[in-house]
Image 1 (cartoon, helix red, strand yellow):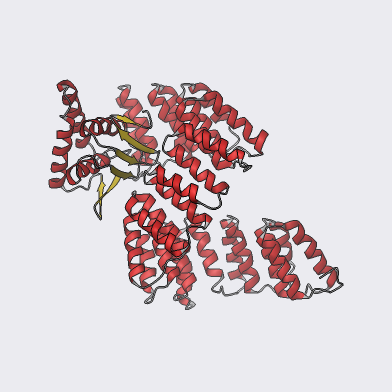
Image 2 (cartoon, rainbow, N blue to C red):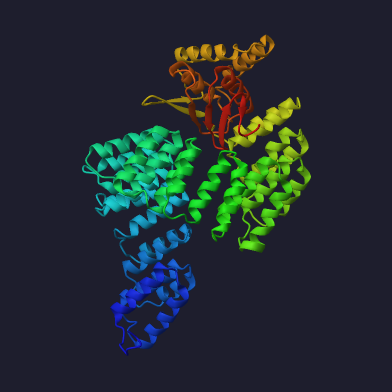
Length: 582
């Protein structure tokens, strides 16, 4: 158009600036901005707003703010563009300050401003501010706006008040696809996968057709509660609806099958995908790492390299984690140094934490502590926690206390650090120090996260939460577990197992780190399914050593495969062994 001598007008300029936004091309956007100034059409308020949006999308806040501050008249669209730009770039505090300034100038937010500021509250966990915005929404008669309603549901879910999210959802007498999906996603965020799938069924019975976004939420719900049958049903629906060729859906299917314990299905989805981008490869490599199939992690990485795809930051986390699990210190360092040198990937705190885990797992405790102390990042919590857990393994009491002090300074509300430290002191018979840590926990007002395990029997999901189990049911399950433990021909071993089982289940109500709820789920599975049926259990916390040991023997004596998907990895028990080699 320019080569033919045509002069662009305001509409043309606005369109090409939007094109720059869509591909985050700030350099070309700046050239077009310069052309707009020279053309004399910059007085158009719409062009200013489009330019602000382009600069914000590209992360160039300074230029966006310069245009905004120089506006003769800053209307609600300009303010909303600035606020949404800050939110989309993760600068929620700046978005909230901009919102306050907007109100200070007497401008009323509109149905674009409210969703953005609610997203800022959601991402920052600011429940009180979110409730105040909700009050203004009702006052301004926007309560029935579906996009604002969706943002309210998301805000309440992310701030931990699912009841309020449900109240907003039920306020809509005729919910639509957007509010349905928001509520399904809210249940998923709250780790209530069963409720999410129940709502998904209601969604279908109401006559709605799921879109790609709804299916992604439903697949995530399956992952959370190891609902493999449900996942396969959704997979069939996705194929019939024609969504299976979409990259994001294929990636979600790989992740769902992996987290539900079916690595074979995950690999099949990968092979059938018409396009395999970097996210697809990283999802499959992470799946192998999650299943402790470390040779396949390295093999898959080499296959990806041969296709010409450059690895990203997430892939290196999987590679370093695999090296840590296998104790491959030299190989781990090779990957760590090749990130920047060979692929231009900048090391993050997560990569450093993997190296800390690699060193401490291999017994290089002082080296791991030195690395942590010199890390160029503030986010060291996971690294110190990893080192603390290995202090227990190597009986490093003094070093453990240094780790605990660092963790306490970062997040005194984390329940697991107290349990780990008390466990280390109790193993060393340092009971005075045990009580000291317990008092610190009480003073900090730490809320326990109780262990929860879920198993699907037929079409029903059964949940076991520490401290909240039917007494009659637990007796039946205990008897079945006891029977499993006495099947060993070695009477001494059987007696030891029964004693361990008894002590574990007696204290399950008070165990913060585990809760031993997975043993109850396994017991119900043994009671309720046919022999040799594979049991699949999800666990919201890491499986403890005692449960792990008992499960290895149960799978051997019962001739069953048992899969426990916890927050650490997939534990695949078979023939008395676990794939994690612990």
